[in-house]
Image 1 (cartoon, rainbow, N blue to C red):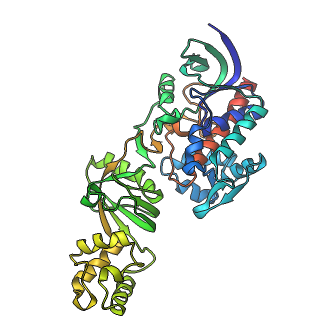
Image 2: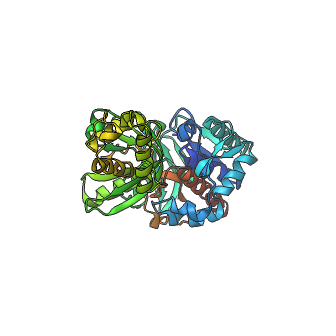
Image 3: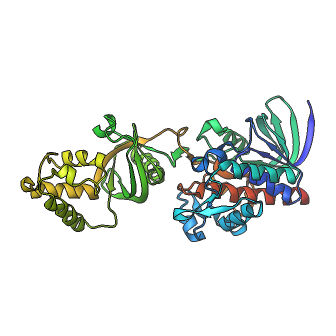
Length: 425
C-alpha cells in the first residue's frame, strides 16, 4: 500500500471543503483535498439556480435569525469569518458581486462557474494538492486522535488533521451521500435525526391533483403554516410556485424546515397552509377595490372584471371556492359570497401532507451534534485533529444565501484552526 503524508486532509470538494482547503493552505499547512467525483464544486455550480448566491449582506443579528437549525452555534465562526468577509474575499480574488433583493449577493456574471473557478484557482495558487475520483473508506484514529484516512483502493494517507466537509444527504448527485456521518460516529459522535429542509412541499388538494394551477407563480405573498391544534407555526413571505405535487419557490422552501419539525412532533398528519395574496392590504381595502372594479364594469362578468387584480388562472378556483358563478355580473353579485371571495384572497387554503424526500431537498437538517464540536475552531471534542465544516454539521438555514454562508464560514474557520493545530502539535 502506498503511503503519503500531508499536514491536513480535506474530504469533500463542495463550498465548505473548498474554503477549508484554501484557509488551511493560506495559514501554512500542506493540504490535500479529496473529492470522490469528477470535478470540484458540483453543488456550488448548481446553487442559486446556477447563479450562486454566495452570501447574504444582512447584518449578523439577522443572519443568525435566518438559521433556524442551531444558528447560535455559528456566533464564534462569524466572529472570525462572516458574510462581509466572504464578500471581501471574493471581490479580492476578482469575483465582482452585486446585491439583489433581500440582501442576496451574486456574481455580476450571473454564473456560478465564475465563483467555482475562482475558488479552485486560489487553491492551486496556495499549493493545495487536489485529487479527484478519490473516495474515502474511513478516517483513521489512534487513542482519540485523528491520524489519517484510508481510501477505497486501500491507499493510506497519513496526516495530523482531517477536515470532514462531505455534505449531508441532499442532492446526492453532487456527491453528498452522508459519508461523513459514519466517520464521525467512528470517533464517538452523535448524529441527530436527519430530515429534509429547504425543500418543496406536497399538498393533497384537488387543484393540486388535477394540476389546475401547475406552473402558476405568485409574487410577494405571505404563507402561514398552522399545526394540527390550529396554532400558527410560522409565517414566511416571498415568491412561490404551484407544482404537480404541491408548492415550491423561495417562500415555500423556508417553510420546509417547519413542516419537517412539526410533523416530527405530531406525526405525519396534514397541516394547514394559507396564502395571503395581498399581505400589504387589509381585507376591507381588498373588498372595496374588487367591488369597485366590478361596479365600474357592470356588463362584464366578474371573472373578466377581476383580470389584472388577481392572477387570471387563480380566478376560477377562487370563484368556485366562494360558490360564485364565473359568468355572474355585478348586478347579480351576492354580497355574502363576495365576502367569502375576498376572504380567500387573504387566506387561500392548502392542505400540506409533507415535504419531498431528503434526497430531493436542497439542504439536510440534522447531522453531527453541535455540542460535540468546538464552535470556536470546528474541532471535534471526541478526537483531536478532527474538524468539521458545512452541511455535515447539525446547522442549517433558510434559503437566501444563508446556507452557503455557513459553509464558507465554517470551512474557513476549520481550515484556519486545522492549520494552527498541525503547525503547533
